[in-house]
Image (cartoon, rainbow over all chains, first blue to last red):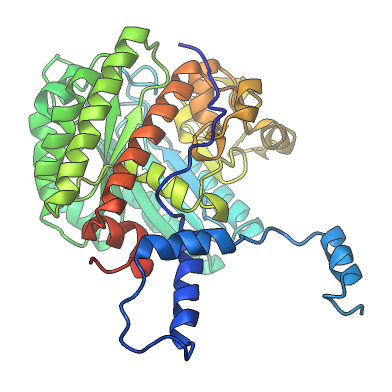
Length: 79
Length: 376
């Protein structure tokens, strides 16, 4: 036996809890929008997760240089 | 939220069994004194007060129930002193079950102990290694303890099943036996102290493949096998980005005290308690901070190959005592650990993907809870 690192990241068909949380929040927001016809069957869960995965980013720790960039982009008011 | 400080007291070197894989060293009648126990408890409370403010105490050995009077004394001493200092304490014990009478179990249950019962599955698997001094297998005696545990539903318990080169060929039947006789969590503790040959590892992999197939079937029939070792790998994917994956904090969050009062950074490193190179103080002189800082600075994983491994955050490569058992260094991974972890992760992922795509109700409820979608 020897130590052999796995260098290829396998993409699982299993959403992480974080993605699923985003998905749940997005579904909740989606259901509140008036253009959703009442009583319409929900999209398949897998599609929701895929959509959420595409749009959702998990925020990491905010670093000072991130704040600087946001300020430059006008997204954050300078103190 | 930070975990409580874990204080382990090894009450005795003596044991009713002579397990072939025991890493705790030679068995002889030598118990911790009351004075050492008191000093150890005071040291644990002081360190908890200085750090996380809460404490778990666990009684270990040898077989801790051989020192029943001392255990009761320690419990009362800890309860009184912790209350005076306002430190919340939870209690636990790891036992081989051979001395776990109904009266003792009732006493432990009334005080909300977490019971870790060492039971290696079926009679064939268990008796391969876990024998009395006269050579008799101990399975029948331990099964009686398991039945007593089952009769107290509110009791917190888990079964610890050790898998080593000698008994691994019985793994599937062993876990099946436990699933039939026990409804709590089953933890598989792989023996990292032993040498595993390539052939033995292939044979272990074959057993694990069959075991996860059994787990799949058990979920489909609505009564999941609770094999914590596999379920933990599923959770390591689900919560990978939220810091759920455990990271060993050796030297910081655990103090194990040997019979003679030496301090060790993990209960699995105590052995016979006479290895000065891995101790970090004793109950009389206190914690050796220089050595503690050495552990903190050295812990983790320094194995170069692991730096590029995509599974490193789901692997137990930072577990100090496991690395120590496999390589003699707390930050060096053994080939067995690497190969085993890759196998466990692969099998857990295949199991979880299948059950997720089926929207298996038991699986969705267990792993996604409130976020679980309804079945179509």
